Length: 337
Image (cartoon, rainbow, N blue to C red; front, top):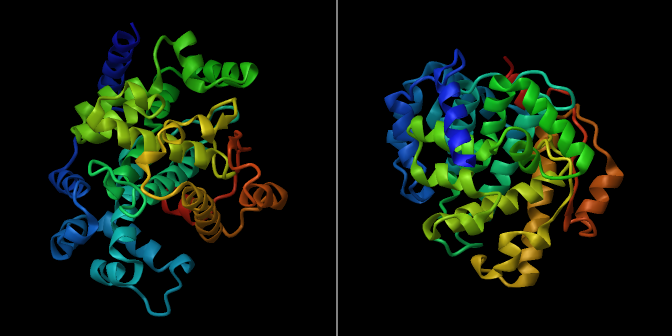
């Protein structure tokens, strides 16, 4: 029943005025590159693809010349951006820019804005990429760039529901907060399916790689994924849990999560490092998210007490829905509608 309802709503999404535009050939080539380790990506080919899209190039150069990357000399080409930002950072930035531009605007909802949503997705993508680094995990199927895309798009079904089932989705948000339960549970109770199941069918129709679609479909319950997708789904779930306690954005959930209950926590062998190093890795992800977000959003005020508690590890195991932020930093200016 859940899948039947998801297919029906996905069809509504694909036939609506806000249907996703067909993926251009250049974008499909970029997605194919996501399956390659960064050190195997051909830089001239990547640069040529990006340069073929003037709008994409302009956004990338704007980011490369931002205070975050601390450039003293103006960056004027994609190759210069790669040299200055690093190849992996450039590639993931391109994916972020592309998908933010291609997806429809997130409608205004009570307690859940487009900025809240995208800030959370950016943080989840960044955390997922760090978890997927070969030093930290031993799953050949989990490529950092592909994990970044999965983290970036993990909640895209919420956009589809917010646009096509606005009243019901608003009710789901309220129900999740009122009963302090996962948003997905409220979605099943009220709509009859989950945003991740809807996202799977829409993104599959959009010709995104199956590995990314399956990761998004199963990150909330990695054990239900086929073996070849389980590792990536598990890492994405952990990235989601970590992100939700960072104070960045809003995931729509009205409950707390416990990292100790994540699939990875129950299967630590997925991460190559020892337990103590795994804890340090999670703390490092928190610190990286905090630093990057502060640089990209210099005017955003932080709750120092919450951050200090998070960074000393006392709150690292529990994840709480952050308060929405309304400030617009570089991320917001780059992708403002």
